Image (cartoon, rainbow, N blue to C red; front, top):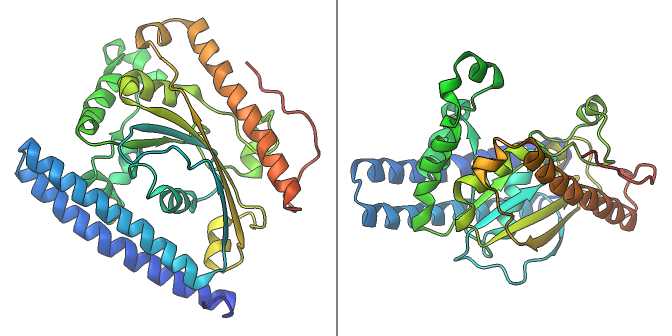
Length: 313
């Protein structure tokens, strides 16, 4: 609607509207979280959690409305068939931008339960967003490093137990959990530093997804493998969207069975970990080729030389 305006004005308009949207819905969610905290009756907590998830749904819808105002974006989405709002899903995706969360929550808002994230403990202190995520029962993790384990072996298994306690809150309401297995947003610098065997992806890390599966794998209905592509976007996707420069967003969703992870074997057997990593590398190799074909079809300037991606085991 307003995409005829100059880029700087669109950026100011979108920044203001997105901030207002986040502050309003985060405040309502935080109030619900505080009520839930002082009234620890499970039936009441469940009702409040459903209402707060609905507020997150409204936040995602408003984000879509803001996008409609500032840009003419064509959404090319495949794979929504068969998804259910009363299922439990573990979602893995490539990670390109801070805009990814808004895109995923908007597209999937009516097809699966609202997404939950494993967050670094430090993010709890981000204004509005941190407490909003806490109120929505998103787990805040303080991962034990190898150095800490070496110094204090008693900490072994503590992270898994913390994850299980956090995930126990999800057993009352259908939940979708997203895990960015690359561990970081894709940049050309990170790609080069890793000597990544993929053209458009960073190396996937199996530890996080194995951690989640070992904690609550029996609850998940399916694993959702999402491929997200911005064919005409500049390197800074979020800035490009907010300046009205992104015209097309491609999303492919593949529904897979949930792999089984035995935590006793996985965390104590190197071959078991290597086998799981090879499985994830295979998915990432297919994803890399899928991204290449999408970029080729869209005549994207992001295309790189067509060479086979070979993931290391």
